[in-house]
Length: 125
Image (cartoon, rainbow, N blue to C red; front, side, top):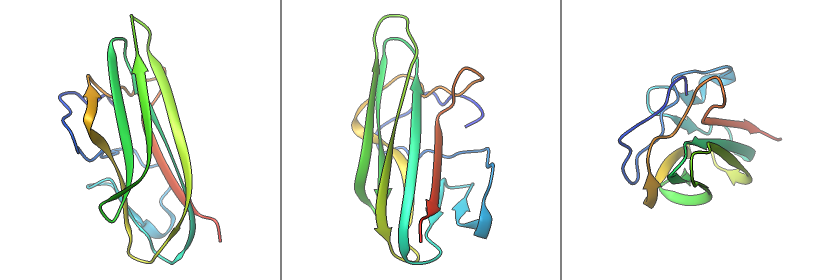
């Protein structure tokens, strides 16, 4: 993300406006979804950056089902960043994206030159 997201509610899909690489055009920038182009093992990794006094849980969702999550909390005035990585067997046309957890979110998701909220995925085999 090139900038922070504010006023985020539960089950809010994360849309990433900056795309560094998109070989095969599997990532759909307008929706934030990665549509699996070919069945196989895939790696998905994401990071979440937040400001002091906030918290967020961000879920990796495959075809509507949570397959992974990262929970990040920052107390006081400190910013914090955390991430997660998952390897899954994904089928062609599976829909993979990030969204905020329904219950665990407060405050903005931060993206700036000090650290970015990000998402990446690629095929292993």
